[in-house]
Length: 323
Image (cartoon, rainbow, N blue to C red; front, side, top):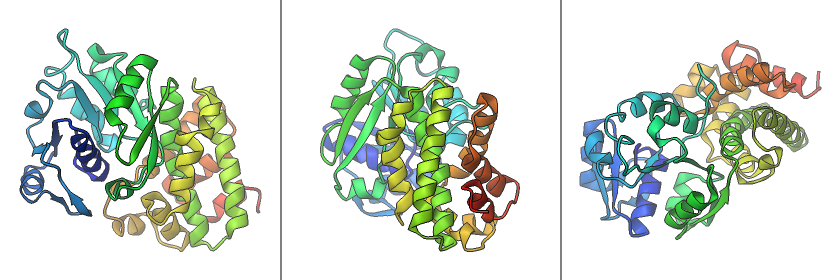
């Protein structure tokens, strides 16, 4: 398990409870030592690491002999980390499977996280799958019933991965639309910020319903233009994930939007939230994807202007036709 943030730690613990031996890699040695010693994550107080989880900051040791590598890193760090693994995995006949649990689109290349991994580890092409869906880490840690998707090219391998992850609070379904699932997982973070902005502006549920409806339509058009299947947006990685992150106080992206809607600057709002919010960079990638695809997406364009060009929050209302 690469990444000892909220989701990586919870997934590592979940897999250990399923009977697997798990090595959890944390970049910072001091944090790794503390997590290994205390068996507690500072942001998940109710979780105690299972005995089957070993924590290390030695990435070579963490992937040695692994049959499955799960990537739960911030999207901005995935390419560099994968580049460091080139000499360690995918160079012999005993190739691991890889599952990316990270959501987002790379800023420069506009590639999904699975595509970035395959770029850097071409020997693993066809063996990289995406895990996505409505799944707050703290809720999974508490045992809340949760359903997610495993998506990739070969249904047989996806089913094999389903058997590994499925159990306890997690139920897993299979999809072959990896691109649609990944794009849905990244785009919904942008719309979650938009939902929070309406909350901060006290715009009301009527307005939020209009936003969710238009946002879903834009996601569908963009996913179709990018080679995914439009119907994917009506599943767990689209509508399901958007309902979760766009309406819950647990959502970091929605909370960021609420602070923006209440008048804080982006810099001030981000200082008040201690964990990563992928939706900010995803807004830039979403805008570039719409331009490259020629897709009409006024809400996604407005979010790019607000987050990266200093436009006022009212620009979101204008995009919805309330001007």
